[in-house]
Amino acid sequence: MLFLQHGLIYRDFTNAMRYGDSGRIKNCLTFFMLWFQGSQFSNYAGELLHLIACLNHVWPKEHREHWFQNVLVNISGSKKGFMPGDLVGELVVREIKSWQTATATGAGGEYLRTVMAPQVLFCSRIRDAISREIGTTRHYKHSSSVTAWFDVRTVADKLLKDRVFTFIPIRQSAAASSSNISEVCDLYSRGVGQIWAGRVIDRYVDKRQAGFNYGLDLTEDIEGEDGPLAMEIDELEEGEDDEDVMDELMEGFF
Image (cartoon, rainbow, N blue to C red):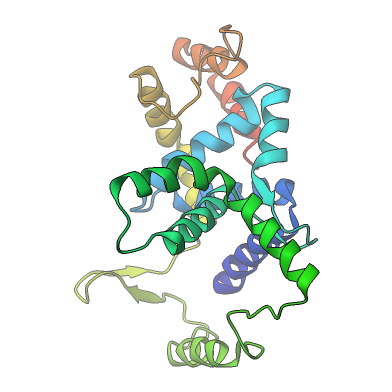
């Protein structure tokens, strides 16, 4: 059941990216933020916590709308052709590398980086238009349809071997080494427990107050005024209605 839960959320996340549904992406990232809490992946846990805090509490309406409208990019016009901005950057880098020759000089490399790189997507459109006009044959990566059967068979064999479909009251999984065995847990429940215990939020606030740079200042909004989360943090520090303030602070996370 845990495998299905995590797999379906990840599948929903990938579909949301393909079809440009930034709202679903934000919902999935909230689950991912909880999954990473209390895990060994502290960088992911901290960055996702900061992003969710910004989307729910810190950023003004205009900033949130900008994130939702620009977190995905569609360079093909296809209804299922959306992709993250960093993937577009990787496409640009790949194209520039294909233009780079072994005999290129330093000046040639500088020209590619400063002049041609900003025009990669424009050049791609020109290439497509010329191909259509002269009726050339476009060769793609695959000469035949790709089947997922072998990947599915590999995963299915692994799941059957590990008996994931057989109920085991105290199931254990091998970690990095055979000597380090840990009990399989519900990542969501453990993450929620970590958040509500308060240690995660306290550590996050301490880092922000110490000047740890996540990007946008947590305690200030665009105009430099104290944001809503800053006031809630002040109330927590003063010890006033801790439970009510924590409830309000965590409301947007779920």
